Length: 411
Image 1 (cartoon, rainbow, N blue to C red):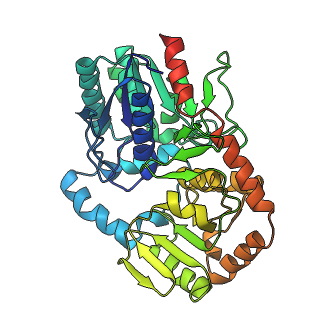
Image 2 (image 1 turned 45 degrees about the vertical axis):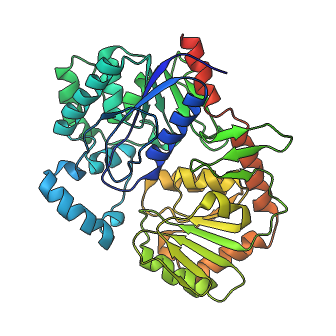
């Protein structure tokens, strides 16, 4: 299938490591290009930036945490991250995330919207796609360009918001002669179409009044191949793995806690107490510890989880959407420790409510609770079966093909 059209994709920028927007951006680019579409990006060259071959990238400013001056932010923020100070803060809504990362700072909003508008003028896209980037929403609205956005259940205004944080945003909207909002999260309602990289069973988002078809569930943005009787899926790093893995040997434990409430040092200590010397090979992904192997425990900044998940008995993670979806696609039950972050709490609870995993409070993150949860999961096929069923629903939801279909309707 080849479709003519131009899409400008703008992911959320941040100084902090956040794999979600950047990895989904790459998946979107590759999926849309495979359909013959002309794709460009407007991405900040922040810590999450990776070049995408043959794709034009337009300049986007990097936000400074809390809107701090750049000389201060670039010196203090990495230290705060390494010491775990940033992970101790309770986050109750997505607009608090936007404020913390600097995406709600008036000065940043003003210059980033201008940068995206310049990209629109030069590239002349048919659609602007915002991957949780509110500046892109504002720019598209001002330029009267059709707008698509990624959305999720816990980032809705109705789910949780903080109206006190919208002062700078509304100042800019007034200057641009655009409608004011009660919170930044209402900006996502401006989209012509909203795409959720999940399924209704996990994220039952309500439709907007009078716009009953405004939500499109994609399941996963990962590319789906169906060239044989056995479905396969491609991870964003190009690794292909079997979708049907129920007969695989499960002798690995994968661990990724990201920038969660639990520190890397604490995570390693608990893993050693719980699994050191066991028959399971433990793979811990973190950039906050030296790369090394301690017996059966392996530590590195990054592992190819797309390959390792095929052999995993469990996946211990922080409840991030990408992590949860990856686990379900491979039919792996999960132990989730979402900490103080609202979105991760929701994601973890939604998986636990479908009997595909167990949630552990960060205060209970110790070897005793981890081993107890591990024994519950491996002592029955129930959670593995539930994980595989959810994985099938995610694979069969349509993926990026749904976005391409909506583009054809728009044309």
